[in-house]
Length: 234
Image (cartoon, rainbow, N blue to C red; front, side, top):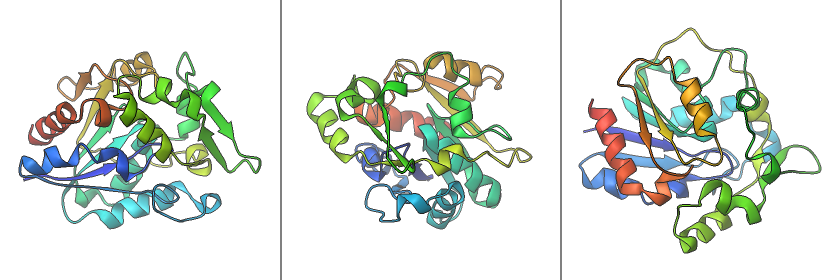
């Protein structure tokens, strides 16, 4: 039996995993998702949120050896949490995610891509503490292969994304973890070419692919759950 802890990406919350968890638990595993600080039902003021705060909440939610799944920007906090508590980690699974590089922030990593598909969808707050995804563009960027009614529901759940965790450089880089990457080849938020480039030197067998948008947890939850289980058991 595997214990999965599912971590959402920018502007999302634990809600985005609602359709995946039943498939994991039906297969005999334990699975849960959490809201990172200032996301979902967590009421932490956005201006106070840090990358370490993200990692701390992840660490507090682990109950023994855990498979940590990080979507999109959550590649950073799951890595920091693993660096801080390596004895708690079974595997790290990066789902179309940013994998940290020493000295680089999420914002730095994003700029390594040849294209910036989210640039026209990000609305910065007046105090420059958060960015919000333009709801008129969210379906195209995140959910184009998701049922329209489910996409509308998801867009209504999106929240302002604290900027500070995204501009904080990763200070690790010395630890190694048992890790796997899932590329999403129809992703319109993090370019597939970027995902391929960032994992091109990873060993055989620890990179897999799904022909989905940036949100396979909504467009293909059963397929995603099956892939998470396969990776965990490999």
